[in-house]
Image (cartoon, rainbow, N blue to C red; front, top):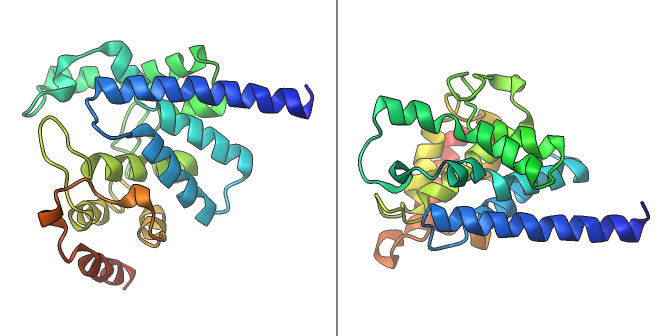
Length: 222
């Protein structure tokens, strides 16, 4: 395949992935672009780890399609207020595997498929679907886990309002060494100011948030 043909193929794939991302955002009732936001932040975080360009492209594709499984499952409990029942929780654990299959159907390469499968794995091995832990989880999947969590926390959901940047970062820090790779958390907190990092919390809730953010970062670094 020539360089031009390869570029055209990649552009076509990206367009298709963006359409799938928009469908997932609509199903999950995000008022703001969730998947594209994750893709942008994840790419910046990947750069800080000097991730190779091809692996960054795979991460970008996985960020766009990470919740395809939820769309296919079409469960109403995804956007319902309140806690999930045990049966609902076990049912939800299937969505990364279904997403893996759907990303394959969409033409994503195997690296993208596996990142979609593993975006809910936890650093301590308590994630799903494969209970991977620590470095068993690819770096790109560890990056996606942190960024997906942060983006969801700082956006309005049907069952809660968006948290401020400070509140969301507190939760990310609290999960370091449990849900999240501590080194990825540290790199995330050190990211430069990005438009995509801004919270969708109401203006009143974000007063003095930048000063508090610096305090959190300094505390975590000690």
